[in-house]
Length: 420
Image 1 (tube, rainbow, N blue to C red):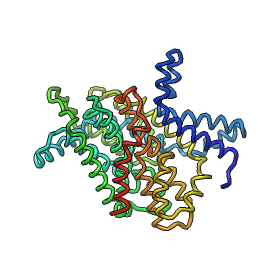
Image 2 (image 1 turned 135 degrees about the vertical axis):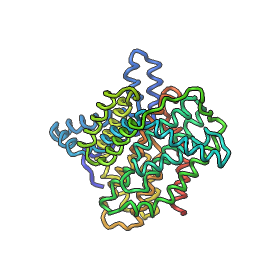
Image 3 (image 1 turned 180 degrees about the horizontal axis):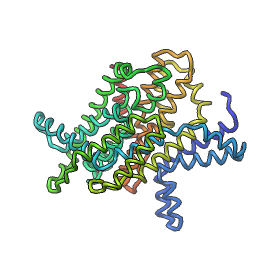
Image 4 (image 1 turned 180 degrees about the vertical axis):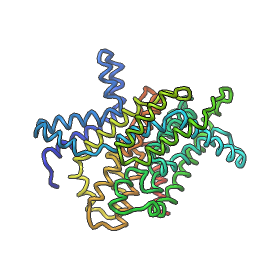
């Protein structure tokens, strides 16, 4: 492998950043033990801060080993469209009218299922949230689906402070299902988006090669989680009747949502739409709730850091992929996804020339199947963490427990992709 001192330093910093994500709980404990510097330890204990923080260290390193102009040129050549898009879609998809509309749709579906299956409303809503919302990711993009599902699960499960098994089990299933739920089209899942144009993969191609397998895995994961946790799910309260939101307000929010999704590759346009959306919600505050600006900014910061750090990992990732068989590529990309963003992984794989269709399908299949194993494995994961983290003990999501919880649904996804 040929590498420069800058690339080697970047990989060392990247490895430290990955290790940092597994140690956020330790920094939170330091904050409790050392109140004098609690602010610093709390900052380092925020999982969304990790990659942005170490990306800054990388830029300082490049400035010292080369010069400031080189560091600035490196930053200017990075593509920050994805972090900006996730920032914008989180704010719009997390708005009160969108959540109200989504909740009403799920409740309507739940009533039909309850009538047929004679089940309780809480398990039915739980199943639909984990089973249907991820599939919406193929239409409204995975970050939007993650935001919607996380808010729905927050109100249905997390606010009731269930056991740690439910907390992490639900999160593991959510992350895996969202990762594979965006594979029915060629524009919704970041790892698919990175290769669709280069390999000329249409939405019809994605559906024919991943659609059935993804749907089966998603429904099995959702069903198993529902059966395991149904006795710990509380029925929705009927005493607090939610105030109806006018159809015109919902329609405006849906227009903004679909506008941001439609122009997902044009940051100037979707950021303009976001600013217009913020202005609209400020002008008509009656049916609004505070926008999740802080959470969206943290997630955008996380992903931007990942873009910066991931850009210099090709010197070791690409040679590894080149010498693998298609079967090895599937399992290799699945494992590598746990320590690097799956979109970056598939992008690097798309640079390998002369690969077979079997190789390409294995690369993408492994990347999306492993997208729930860690926070950094899939771009929408930090959005879910940002919304649900306050309901975990100590306001920290253990990376180790998340990994363990995501292994069973990941195995279901592997079985679906390899056996069906």
